[in-house]
Image 1 (cartoon, rainbow, N blue to C red):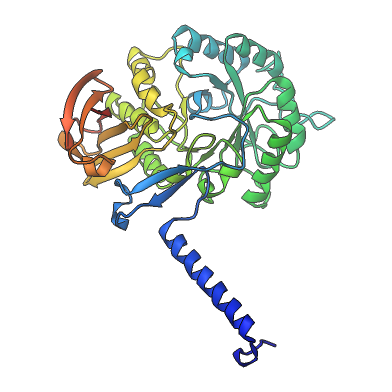
Image 2: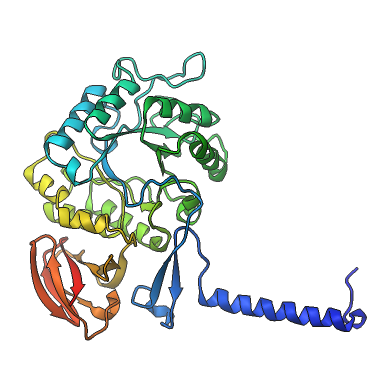
Length: 427
């Protein structure tokens, strides 16, 4: 039975008043500073709520629970799925590793060579272990890892938090988590993409927690990429489990899919940071479904948003146009900037958009993005990107590789579905 106020002693009443005061102070603080989840916290510093995408936020680093020393910048590399699907074999993987080196892409940071679904036999061996497909990977994954490592690159592999992978052609890792991580480690695997098919009716949290715990124990040198498709807002919890997490369904090689993935990923910007990144899925640049302008926009927004830069085309036969986009070292430098803050959409008017974010050394990265079907002038206001109106900058055009001065705002005429990308350095 509850104790009524008439029975309280003076000391009890004093204690109650102190608790109430503390609770009120806590509530006030909570209203002022949003709860911190993940690696970064947005702190409102005297700016109106409508300035959410403007200059009213300060970014504070937070140590995340999952700390394997990997992913201090977004991962870069190549993945087999977007172009090849299940049509993979060990020769393709070796040739891709060769091509990354021979084209100079490896020196730019594309270090992971990731095998996606369909690499294993349909069933485990009599000891419950994964077995590489005997027709397509006859030398085994350990030998392939040795080959890739000899090129100065890293090998990634794929599994699933379910009974079978998404292709249904090989087993998943559900209830085999520790066994499989031990296997991957013994093979020299450097990266695990962990998908979300055939879940046996079990919760996302249970299934991904089990693999995360196995990785923390037996796979500390393996980059852990959660591919949960953004179904249960993984940005809010996956920072304690892995190095990156998918925020969207699979991307497709068309304008509508790419732009929608960018928008879906944007809402989670505050949860990304060194050690853990939002993942709007792999790059489609070079696969043929979009124009050069659209692919340039795709690559620019992914770079600004600190998304993984995982090439999804056939690098053995990519066109010069594709190579020019994927090998723009100035755009890559924005993605790999040591500050590790995800840029986001800060202005939007009828498909004419400004995306921006802070970089190290007080610089700003800015993308003027024309999502309309006609040529248009887009203007970025200093107030939207966190600069005082009096600030003069040197603006570096990352696609034209030229520089000029600007103050107060930045305007450019942008072609349909194209973008302009800049780094602004205050003078």
